[in-house]
Length: 72
Image 1 (tube, rainbow, N blue to C red):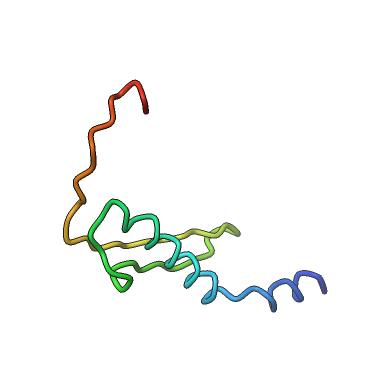
Image 2: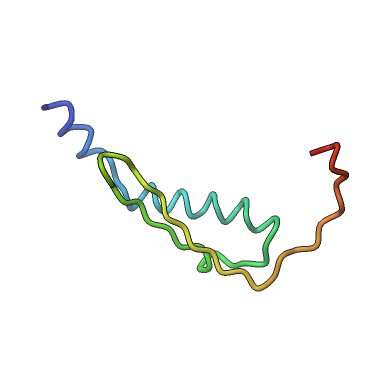
């Protein structure tokens, strides 16, 4: 029980959320026209599991080159 309390004390959900939002922005901005404030996320705990919820608003999808299906 003591170890659980120590681990919970070190866990900073807000910091993890901020890191995830930055990483999501970095990846999604390659495919979508977005700005950092367009990426929202939160971490919930449901039935002992962590659930990441994300919402991203994009102005448009970036046009990509066509990749032949056999290369996917």
